[in-house]
Every structure is written in structure tokens, then in C-alpha cells.
Length: 335
Image (tube, rainbow, N blue to C red; front, top):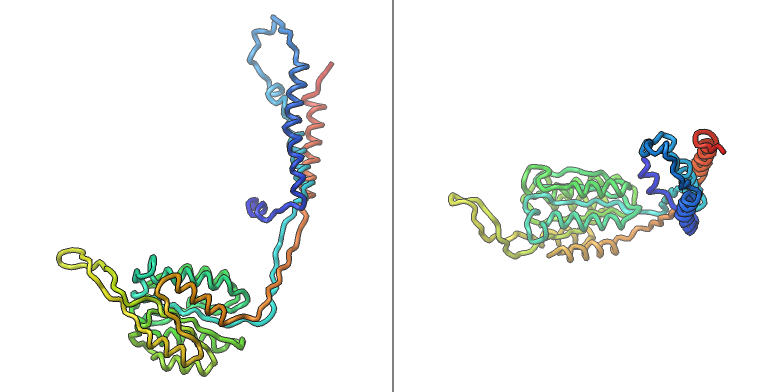
């Protein structure tokens, strides 16, 4: 709680902290005066008591310590501590959008580092971060599809769900692109935004599913939903470790990739097809989509400040009063 409070505190006049230099000077002056006034005459009859200290002598400097701490609090109060509260007001019209992720086993191919899915997650996170005001949802698919996050304006919730995506999340293997698109259409069809978009990210190798891709395309057109398809991967060969009767062996495997299907889906829905052969290309693709699908949204930020000087001043006064009381009672000097 204290850490959170400190994190949100800022100072209106931070230059006042220059006065902190007074505290070392006061300590130096205090020690100098004590050295001047300290008695130098040793009484022989009390010499044997050397090293015996009472609580009073042990706490002799405590009032001065209180004074220094109170001065510290006074300087902090003079610097104008205030707590900042930021409020954002969104106006205009955003876009209803679903990010449709292929999480089948083929998305763990290592032609991207560390693999296709992890690279896609990282770039999608950056994309979502730059889309304030949009309603964004997440759909996952392999041989079946699943809504991981319904469309929402809660940007942080979407980002958290993207980071949690793992291959094998749905356990069933395969790539049913039509099912993933159909679920995405279902998420968007009741949306009130004029612009509705699906961003499909897959390697494009469809194995068939409950709903064929062409039926999903017809559904998208019915609800005026554009589909941007991103084909992730390449035709190059990679080294893959497989098990054999002789133990683990390394063999070359050609990565499957079907551009034709993805181009067809994008063309029929008024979207666009992109091919990502590496992570840098994937980043550029999301930037292109960001430019093609602009939101008419204005985010106005309001900063509110709450002055926090009063409790600090009260603490400083309390410490000064405690010092005065102690000096005139427990630590009072008698002539």
C-alpha cells in the first residue's frame, strides 16, 4: 500500500529539496557545540563508573534526531507532494476487431524465433497497445475453435489474454480455419460499430472442420466483416528431432504453407492478404493493418491532483512537540 502511494506521488516544487543540505550542517553544528561544552575534568571518585550508561545517557541525542526528522518532513511538505490521478475519456467511433490465432502444432515451427506462435503473440501485443478505443476480442482454433476473450474495450485484459496463449491450449490437434473464422464472425455479428474486422493468423494448412472456410467467408460477408489474413511461415526446410528405434535423430522437414486459401479468404471479404516470412515482416504487416483500419477515436487525458502536504506537516509538528516535551522533562538540564 505504501509503495503504491509513493509510486503515484509527485512534487510540485522539487527544487525545494535543495534545503536538505541544511540537515548535514545542523548535525555538524550540533556536534561542534557538544565538543566545546563537554566537560574535560575527570573526577577520580567516579572513574570506576566508566562504561556504565543509563537509558537517559543512551538516548541523549534522541531529541536532536527528532528535530532533524521534523525538518526533513517540513522540507518534503514545502516541495508540494501531490497524488496524481489520470483519467482518459474516449470519444468517437472505434473498430470491432477479433484476433483469430491458429494454435495448432504447426505453429510451434521454429522458422520464427523462438517459434511462430510466440513471435505472433509478441507482435500482436504491440499492435493491440496502439489501438485505444477499439473493441478487441481473441479467438483460438486448432481442430476446434474457442473464444478466449469476448470483444471488449479493456485493453489490458486483451493484452493479458494474448500473453497466456499457448500451443495445445485446446488439446485437439489440427487446423480448422473455417471453424476459427465462424467463431470470430459470431463474436462480431452483433457489434454496433460500422467497421468490423477479423485478423486471421495461421500457416494456412486447413484440415477441414465443422465449418468449411468458404461457408465462414459467406457468413463474414453477410455481416459486412472484412478479414485480413496473415500467412505465417515459409517453404524452407528445418531440422527436426524425432524419435526412432535407434533413439532421437535429426531429420529435415519441409514446412507446409498454403497461401492460395488465405488470399481467397481475404479477397472475397474485402480484406487483404499478407505473408510473414519472419518476425520483422510480421511487425510490418501489423503496422500496415493499423494504417488500413484507422479508428476515428480521440483519447483525452485528464490529470487530477490531490494535495498530500497536510499529513506530512502534522507529522512534523508532532515530532517538534515531542522534542520540546522531552527536552523539558526527561532530558532537562539542571544548573
